[in-house]
Image (cartoon, rainbow, N blue to C red; front, side):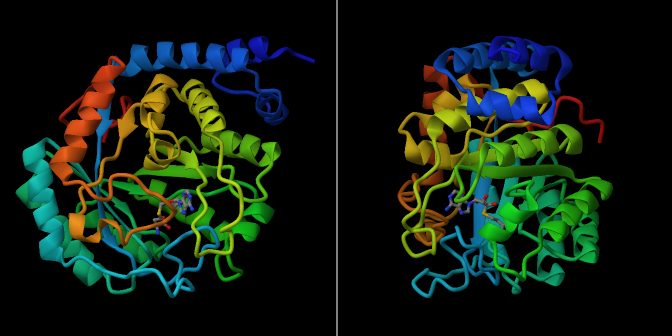
Length: 351
Ligand code: SAH
């Protein structure tokens, strides 16, 4: 048996561990190991990114969704979910406001809403890129056809976020209805990468039925897939879903995994997510102090924010975008980091 301290030192040098060693690191987590990981992760992140925190403006374009993911508050079976979709004009207004506030990445995220065809999205993406050429456009719109991913890329989209949710097929099947397939999710990620997107994968921490071995597989997947970004956050139950009574994920474990991910891939873009800030009032600050280097404040119109409820008690649903940005800037400064105004490409990106 190798002790945790040795495993952590090995991970920092080799950027890789055996699957069973990742599992040991998770199962035998101690406050001492967490501290050692945190210190190593911060050292590595500062060597690559200094104290810069990259900012992405999140525009939640639709709460309509044709999917039925068991964990998600906007799943189609939730008849109580409030539905809306933004018009292309409203989305452009969000970008305009965001640009003035210093955002240089716009993330268009939404449920899988068939209204947002390529015919709607391609001209919208082209317009954003034409009006603000120094900005990156990120899409987070779930699974689409290969042809659609290609058309959106050709229209100018730079990045695509599609969490793999779990790298274990049987676990994926426990979180999704039968019509969604693990194999297709993984295939989409591969296609996105081949099309030249900067790809973000990711997973929830503490999702129902998740084991330490599942999390170890998630880490191994990130190590091997080599995404530009990996978004992780604690699972938070939504009261109108089948998982309403499941326990939420652990903030401590999420922070621990953030540090491990930083050591697996020093240049990885790692967001301190809204879910982390929802479960812990200073969760995002703790995320940055565990090795994260990205934040994604909300740029959606205030009028729709309470309708994009993936989970209960989501923060920042009552504020104006300017307030959100100012609040986050102060939070980052309070722990010695600063928000930066540029696209925030990954360090090694040669695109
Ligand atoms: N429809 C898009 C965007 C999904 S929302 C897509 O499929 O990619 C972004 C992420 O929120 C999801 O990938 C999921 O990991 C996370 N999420 C959904 N419900 C959640 C919950 N109850 N708790 C925590 N995270 C959740």
